Image: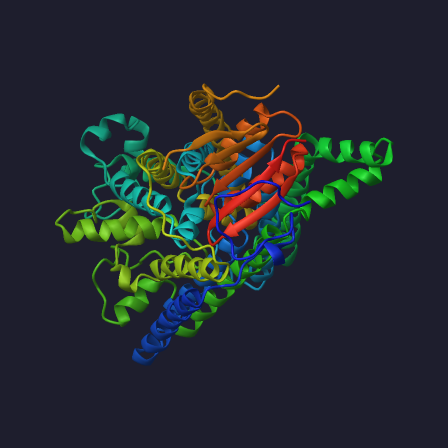
Length: 502
Length: 83
């Protein structure tokens, strides 16, 4: 059916309705192609040039190119964890829940393969209700901000100024939150303060000053570490433990259950109505199986992105562990010291080096590094001073990954002719700052974001991953309820003088 | 730019959410579609690429066909008919 109305957008050619992407997509301008070459060329030069200086830089380049792949996948699939349950609750769209479950299952399979060879870089996190509470705070924040931690990175690559503000807010909030002491010490339960003092931390880490320090050393570190393999009495690094415990029981079965619930409550109704209208009969069990499958395949871009993301995430663990073996190191801190970079290394000689996809800590680090340069002493807390350090962003492996993620997303956006510089409006800037701050706090309470605390942990059979996920779902629900009320109010004002035809 | 909603002529409305990020475009679209009558059309203008996927899926689920999709770079125009 042809459009019968005039439209305000000048287009290069008329397009047929409705869903054929070949006609919907447009030719890519030469300027975009030039920028694609510049971005790819820049990262290529960084990799080749740094390798020419020393082969240790291969380690940083591995992070860089995996980040680049993640950026391309995220932009191609419009892959944002925030939209998963937000769009389900707000507008009844399950495509992103499906995409995330596909990615998680694929990642889990590749992770288990890596784990069973003993090359996994993954370490499960302590589990307790703190993961659910942190997920709840993070979930509200990601709805307010309009994107999760990884989604904000890829949208920044599309030229989105709101997402850049979100990244800034997450970064500053985390950096400040981990160093808050003084009056905040009065909020620390006595049992945490006492327990923290027994952990034998060096005097350079003033563990009795800082809310987050005492939360970590006095509470989180005392919680049990549980994986699905261990719950079944199996070893995480055994073939059976990894595949049966962590992948089948920990990911595939819960993912099928979750998607079945989503189908029953959000997709089934439309499918049943279509069968009734087209074939004049009720839907059978076989029809529902077809309906379930059509829900899975309804957004091919998202499903394809999930598939590639899942494989790449597992592969990164394998490659990083391989490089650690090659260079005889357990952490990038040793590599940086061998290269002559001593600044910002933690008290135990480490820097943040997860060995897999991660987003938020490197964001806290660059602000922490700047604060240190401005004269603030933030190396007396556990987060920076004992564990992650604050190396210069120029030689921080995880920062190479995030910068390349933005670059990869920019390349994909340019190739799809979707790159556009967008200045944030005041309204969206406020939401970005509030949402980013909530995500920053949630990330530090959970020791990770939607990627580090949910995606990576869940895929590796860590029970705390699902706990954070359930909290995120609750947070998304609260955020959507609020935005429903907010948009309702705004629409009522806009529609006040509109005469709707009867 | 702030969100704008106008009636262009009988049975034809325009919603411009240019500059907005998720979830605003899909939420405003949903709220407008709930107000329209069967056969009415909405010209929806937005520039948030990820909203294109969500709005397409939402319209399919709710039985409101998108009768035309146009693009000018990162700016999108969907014409949605209330089912």
